[in-house]
Length: 108
Image 1 (cartoon, helix red, strand yellow):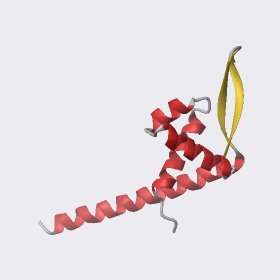
Image 2 (image 1 turned 90 degrees about the vertical axis):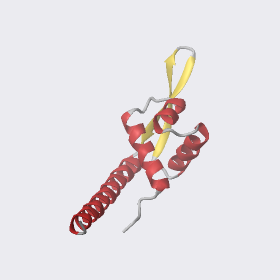
Image 3 (image 1 turned 135 degrees about the vertical axis):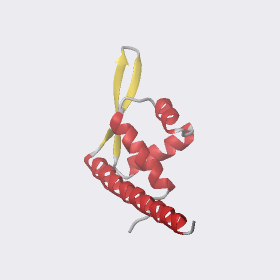
């Protein structure tokens, strides 16, 4: 089974945030995820190089160009796969906590 590590956590959270709010600026994404702008840019580049996201530009008004972060079909599939792995991780953590709780009740 694949372990869900910090890098996966960062990518998963970024994919989720982009899916929820594709028109978020990089500053908004960084603030929402508690990332530095450098870390966010690094993660965005990694996701883009893997083909999980693409950037589209649009004009928010006549003078200002903004970007939309779009999940590609490959990115949607990756997010789904990561969601399943994340849920498996949380279920294992729950099972471990439940076992610990049962052990502590027995030892009292």
